Image (cartoon, rainbow, N blue to C red):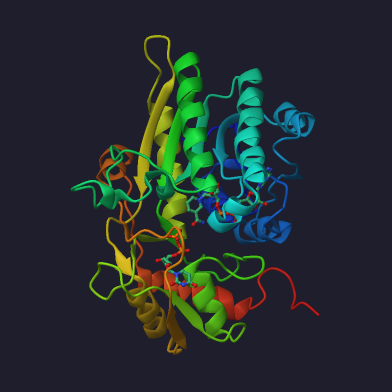
Length: 354
Ligand code: NAD
Ligand code: UDP
């Protein structure tokens, strides 16, 4: 239930964070955004304010800046933290792992210590399906349940798992702390207004942002990373989830944390997958995009991308049963909304580079 207190959204200028800030305001919550803008634009927060007819407090602060973060907690009475901020590119993390550990892990520790100082109880963490690694190394682990043993395969994935473990230890030691770990599968799409969406810097790593840039003429053709996997058409399977559904999952997690208390001197800690429960291949996604937009995507099949696994499909029952949340939007909805965002903002939040 929304209260008079504030919800701190770290990384709230980013892709998933900005969509979640919008849903928070719509549901009556009062968000405060902290973001160092290393991968985003303040314009996203301004637009969320415009869409909701509200002024969202924004601080351009790095999470590792202890004094800067303290000032935010001092000014606003914060009840819950939604922690999106972090570096997220798998490939980049293999090149600059220490930056990833520093920003993701050190940033989270500063945040947790500040929360402890101000007695902030609720913490929702943006984790990832990547913590599971290749779930096909076990029998009967597709779709992937939360009980699947973890085994990330990149520095990025390691930071996510280490943060989960830190949060587990912190909750075990602090009866005031309640933690929801949300393991996202593949977020796609944009807000249906076309005003906010994903604005990747440089060459997009992810499939749909790349497809959209091909469709809008920013890039020549899509490269399909391998068609020799064990799937119906040889391309890998992912569980693609509309970003608005994903955003709403955070409100469901906050409601859950409101309804529970720690026990035996310990806080509360639980993980939930946020996915649809359905897998799609790369070709299926490309065809869905072509159907939703009427644009043909030129493509070529190239070799496998290092680190890709054949199937990441969520078992979504736990979130359904315990958070009373499930996805409502389809891949077609996501493609349509992505297309509106891309055609109305072909260069994202900024202008066309010179
Ligand atoms: P994003 O890059 O759009 O958003 C992250 C935001 O955090 C950015 O606005 C960035 O400027 C900010 N940030 C990064 N480091 C910071 C720091 N040290 N201090 C303050 N701000 C900082 O990414 P996103 O796709 O919105 O992802 C949000 C979260 O969800 C991330 O933690 C990511 O790892 C996780 N996640 C994303 C996906 C995905 O496919 N997009 C999948 C699983 C998990
Ligand atoms: N993919 C692709 N071409 C691209 C980007 C991605 O073929 O330009 C494939 C990739 O191999 C994977 C799927 O699309 O099978 C989803 O990749 P993405 O990077 O979007 O998400 P991931 O699941 O790797 O986090």
